[in-house]
Image 1 (cartoon, rainbow, N blue to C red):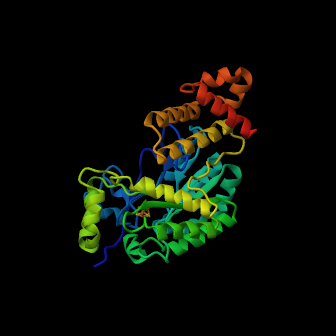
Image 2: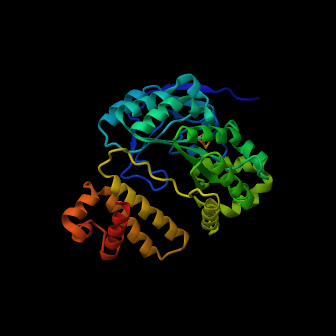
Image 3: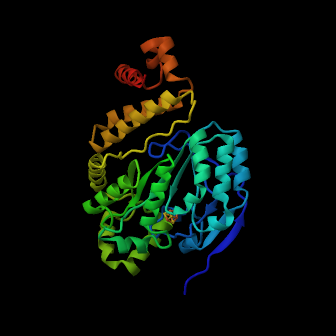
Length: 373
Ligand code: SF4
């Protein structure tokens, strides 16, 4: 018997999660979501982890949806005190049709001049295209669609079953096309790239081709993670409904592992890079820069160097070199002054006065600054 969805009103004390600095995938500094739980109920969803979904029963995650009734007001209060930066927000599960909290939160972002990043499995996000266009004009907006398979993929039926109530990928691609036509940066997040189901060459190429054909500019990939109750839940689903996959998953995710073991992920990421090149798109998301941002150059340099860190990781560069770059990236992200101004007033010495920037990285930053002029 199918289970009925219950909506539970909830008034959290805070809504905005603040991170020390922007991440290097989506470039988001903040996150704020209107609902707890997700009716789409994808079997692999990391949000079933205890820390995100403190439910007694992991299956409640898809049926007991907590509605953060005060989310727009709390967001307004929090943003009025926060530095302007990119917010990861929006949640277009079916509950959104009724409660419209994602829309109200976007209205707050627009009013406060904050850029937004949305990651979705539902085309319902198109309902708010008017607002997204206004946000794009004032502060920047990005919509990425979570897509891990296309109708031409050999495991498509399995993926549809695993994504349960999420609208099918064709609808997400159709929405991507409309978002791109509206001038808003869009692309695909292949997350999670399920081993044995999504990481074959034909599927990777198909997703990248569909993305390019529908106006997407990037394809990001991320692996499946498994932890505590979410891990138990996922393995029980495999055991009951996909027993043929169980031995392979036990090998990829031995007891105690969070990500998959081995080097497969890196090889897949290199292949994705190659395929993105073939279709003229990127395997990294361009960093949205807010119009008039005083620290626009700092952010651009961070983007270039963080992309280099990613390449170094893919190419197995020595760990100490990767760390040297990573620390430099953080230092530039944390710099309060415009780095161009620092360079113009103090020259090369000014760049070297930034924490973790030595002579060699200083020269590299100097070159990027000159290229950006
Ligand atoms: S749509 Fe996203 S948040 Fe919802 S269940 Fe699927 S993976 Fe989780």
